[in-house]
Length: 85
Image (cartoon, rainbow, N blue to C red; front, side, top):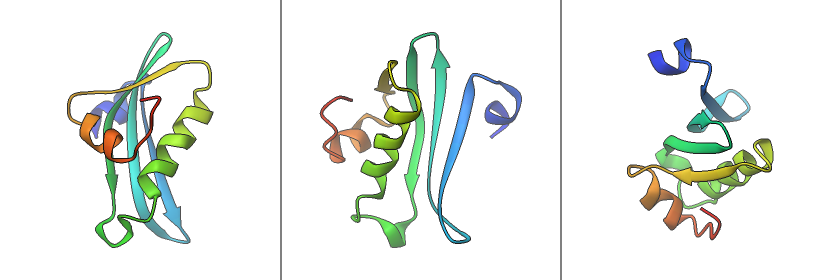
């Protein structure tokens, strides 16, 4: 959490339904590269496409940049069947 608070090239996005946080995704910005550092979906909202929608939103936010998972988020991204990651 400190990296997201203290370093401007680390961004944390929360996905909410009303007042409930259902997911989060953290990225590190490196010039034209956006590396997905952390991603999580609330267990009660898993298998509903939340993770895939979060990844799609990140692509829209950082349109024109290369988006890649890190070694810890790669399996999650693959499970979301996002061909471009």
